[in-house]
Image 1: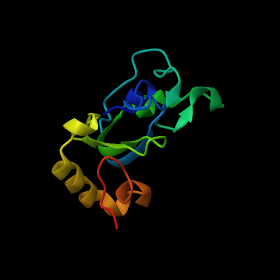
Image 2: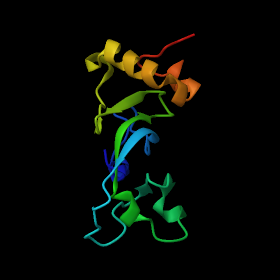
Image 3: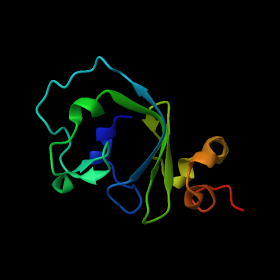
Length: 129
């Protein structure tokens, strides 16, 4: 998943924006070159975790485009839902279409690198106490 995708994603349940990003693994593509004008994002720079209006200089779009998030989590602080990023694809499905076994396996794999509020209390599935 590209960082700049967070500029347009919101929680499907309560429309919270921006979602919090936890990068667990990422891949670098050093040959990528920015071929458009900056900034690529309109509201939010996920690479810096800041709104563009908060930045004191131009965002580092040349650096940002060289990275893909291969594994991670998108988290909504309003409803406490988390969405996995698996093999560069964010899985933002409604609860009834999510696969509990897959989600729990993902949490188990990364539980030591994620905050407790996701691992123990996140929705729709968590590892509990």
